[in-house]
Image (spheres, rainbow, N blue to C red):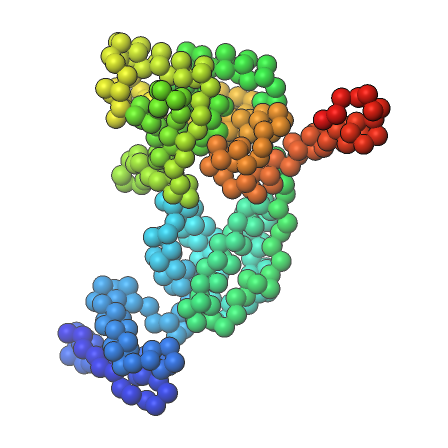
Length: 378
């Protein structure tokens, strides 16, 4: 049986928890907390009760002398409630495969910037036995560690974040492969006609939806009257559970206006699939589905594109949509809205497209300020 009590020690509360051991002896765990953080004995007792529950559940870790591996486990347990499932899996993979084997044994308070810097060099090294990760990937590892250690500082486990004083590798600017012209897009779609990829691909090229959002679309998400598509969910594969509907990225639903051709395509697909049934009867069915009604998995789209050795990835369809609009002078805010992405990120991703428009701006200024008075004013 676990028992405990709190002792008043002037400027702090001393929590004493007594444990029964199998040999009949009793062990004690002592924990001191400052009164400026726990102003009343009731708050200290609440912490004591929480600690006793952790001990009973086998999740308690003594903070004094905690290793980086132990801390990252604890941080990840808290963080997973605020992370998308895919992000949680990615973080756990980085922690288990890279941080724990190389740095996990180090006591949290003893982790120094130099050790972290050496770890980054090892991650990026192309020598035999080293991971040989790209600079962009190492930078993602740094962002994760910096975030986790930042929380350790907030929890007052460390006084300084050692990752603050490390120089992560510079990010190589990412420039996605896109279908550059209208003709290229049309030819690309013609190549996929009659395949299971066609409907999902043309939706990606005309709406900028993510693959998970496309696979999650139901017929009830189409507003046939006004020609809009409502993006409410994302389909994700959860380990042990299969495909699951999840909230969209950033938990924000949105609507996207559809070109008339796409509305007609969807109407034809519906009527063909359900042999002329009235629109709306099969609202709970997936739009992109196998013949038996099962949704197409997002991973299938990615892997099929790779296997067919297509000129772009499936995600490249999204980039092709955005690039097409920006080259046709559509406001970046509208492009970002369709994509469900922050406008600043959109501008950063596609700044290589925007200079093409700068030349036209220069011509407009020339004509407006220095052109002949008879020239048409803009």
